[in-house]
Amino acid sequence: MYLISNPVHQLPTFKLKLPFVRESKGSYQTQQPLPGCPKIPLSLQLRQYQRQAITSWFANNGRGTLKMATGSGKTITALAIACELYQQINLQVLLVVCPYRHLVTQWARECEKFNLQPILAFENLRAWQSQLSTQIYNLRSGSQGFVTVITTNSTLIGEGFQSQLKYFPAKTLIIGDEAHNLGAPKLEESLPRRVGLRLALSATPERYFDDFGTQSLFDYFGPVLQPEFTLRDAIAQGALVHYQYYPILVELTEAESIAYLKLTKRIGRSLLYRERENGEAGNFEDNEDLKPLLMQRARLIGAAENKLTALHELMETRRETTHTLFYCSDGSQDAGQRSSLRQLKAVAKILGVDLGYKVSTYTAQTTLQEREILRHQFESGELQGLVAIRCLDEGVDIPAIQTAVILSSSGNPRQFIQRRGRVLRPHPAKERATIFDMIVLPPDLDRETVEVERNLLKKELRRFVEFADLADNAGEARMKLLDLQKRYGLLDI
Image 1 (cartoon, rainbow, N blue to C red):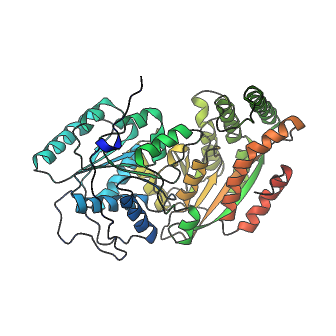
Image 2: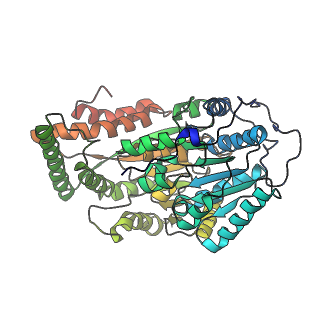
Image 3: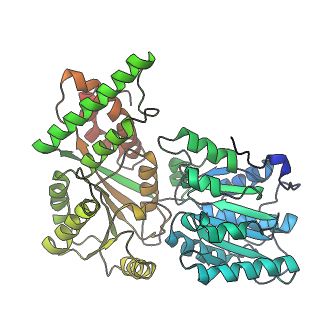
């Protein structure tokens, strides 16, 4: 039995006009709106690509995905769309869905600039559920003009929030922030089908190793709209700052090399078996059996021991550097939760104890209150650095970051793109950013495994080369990668 979601023709449809989106500072509205109703800030000046994106979304009748580089102003663009909808059709509800709690508070700060008074619907059900139901009731009775709700992915799927969604009016806009996360089955099923106005935001909407989830996301929100705004575009237009890129090549230890070789052989055998069974060449992307092996390989590379030595050597000469972010691996070749923080703790010890560098760790366990304190200490220079794992990848806005030391990146291109965009956000005290990227050199492999490694390396190397090509010191950075390209016959990248 198949469940059929509401077809598009059953959804409320609105005749949307192409908006007149101002380039100069100023508001769309001539009248002062009621408290909590959308209003463009007088000081806002949209960039040309933001105006084009807004026009594209309206031309696609209120559906679509904005694929815009991290730091290029997706939030502002989305809120400008809400303001235009309020003018055109008297939009009544804005629902924003974010992957993390800290993004809820970040969105709240931006919403307040647009005259909105958001309900923050996450964590304690009692804190927001009655507030939400009261405001929706007031909206329907005509005693309130607009409702803004910002929630998390985990709250969205809960019964408490789902029970409220059925009361949302037809004139609701849903915004999926870092929308690639919403392609996961449980989340995608929880998205409100009765809401017809839909906007997805992501620098990387395509889901890694999940074509079905990617398609589900586009089926719900709508296709990627023009213009796509790449990192190159963002730097060229001044939305992000220029940067220098320094690859640091790291060798595996003997024990790590042996483990790496075993994994590569197993990956090769799995690909060969698939080829024999199906009569077609094995492919990393559509081979479910490979995912655990590729994850093991990524964890081994991420937690490579010699990265700690390389970090000590690098920071020994940079003890006075401030506003530095250290990205650590969130796992090791050993299983278990305790090992996931092993590199983070080792990095914090090297920096804080051995080198006397003023740092603090920033993890998923860091409370929202502590995160705000750390953010202020970091921006003021009281803290020289933050040592973090994945929780700083998506949406966290700390423009004061001037330097990033990447000890670990997964094979997921999204992580590369998010992290680079995070470091390149403009700040009055920042002319240019600096990125140090630790790249593990594969060990010498036999003839059986070298071709497998070449295919595995091709995608990763393409990202390193892209990092290098967009940097101000592109020639120097590319020379560092040349030996690796020669070794595996990948000079065409």
